Structures are given as structure tokens and as C-alpha cells.
Image (tube, rainbow, N blue to C red; front, top):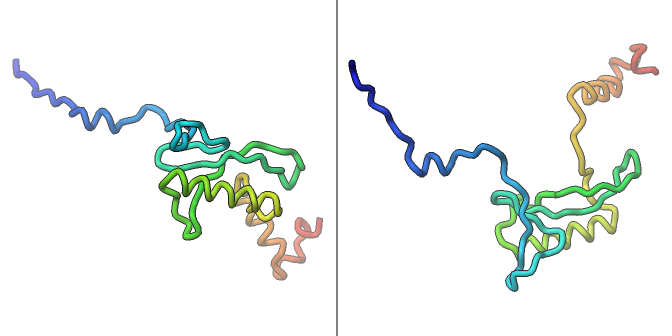
Length: 127
């Protein structure tokens, strides 16, 4: 019988493997008090906002990833609070981008093809 060499995984390999995704955790300020509406998941900060769905008119709670003016994720709690305040101002002015799922490819192609003048004669587009 030949003995097989068994390789064991190092602790760092075991620590980096995850069986599930990261969960949202409340963010606390310098006084260890929770910041209302601010969450952290992994390395990113999220603001929890109530926004109105433009199609149905229903209000829904959404978590929005916080990015600075250059489009990079914020790195510190004060930066996250500042960006969250900017989002709240945009929400009050109805200047928020559409928060929701992007339409599927088939819906996109239907809109593009029907808006094109070359396909304006098709019966499906006239309906």
C-alpha cells in the first residue's frame, strides 16, 4: 500500500472562503451610536432611503450604494454621512436617478427597434 500525501489547507485559505454573502451591518459614529439609515456591507457603505416607484407610485425602501462625485465608493463614515445627506436632498428635489432593476434585453430591443424609422412599418410597433 502506498500512502497518499494529504495536503491540508492553510488557515488563510479557509478564512478567505465564504459559504454565504456578506450581510448588512449598522454603521456607528465616533460615539458608538448607530447612524440612522446608514449600513455597511463588505467594504461599501449604503444609505437606506424610502423612494417612490415611478411606475406604480408606491413607496419602497431601497439601499443605495454611496459613491463620491468621481464615482468611487466612499471610504470613511464621515464621507458616507455626507453622501447620504446629498442623496436626501436629491430625493427632496425629485432629482434621484431611477432606483430599480434595469429592463431586460428583450424590452430594450423592442424599444430601440420600434423607435427606429426603418422598422416603423412593422405591425408589432404600430400597436
